[in-house]
Length: 141
Image (cartoon, rainbow, N blue to C red; front, side, top):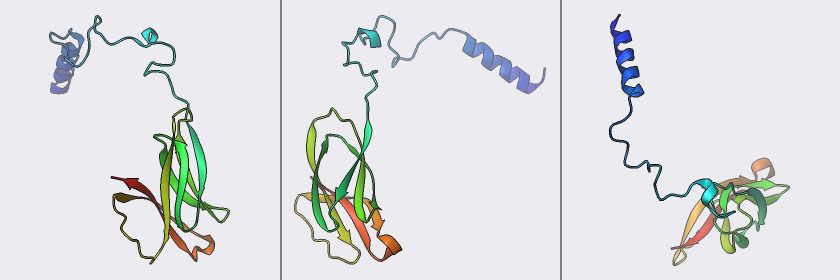
């Protein structure tokens, strides 16, 4: 038996033996965490949630307020049919909230807004790349 076979054999033996001290992060069979079938219908963390990608349009300058489901994830912004569009991953049954988005052109001044920070989303080009827009979400802090 060569050295590799010896090591492989010892590893196999070690992992085929029961553990003396199971990991404390793994609950035992009598733990307090309910199994998926013990939750009321619709309340299990194991129940898949239906999500969709929704599209919104933005004004080509200034600020646009959009009402969308809470916790919607902004995926990207792009130009579609000469309109700046925003795509978000949403869970439709979440409560609706208002969020603000700002579009600014390259070289334009961006004035500070008290209590607001800008989160960059994407840069959008018009046809033939004649105009370049930058899309931000305005977030309160």
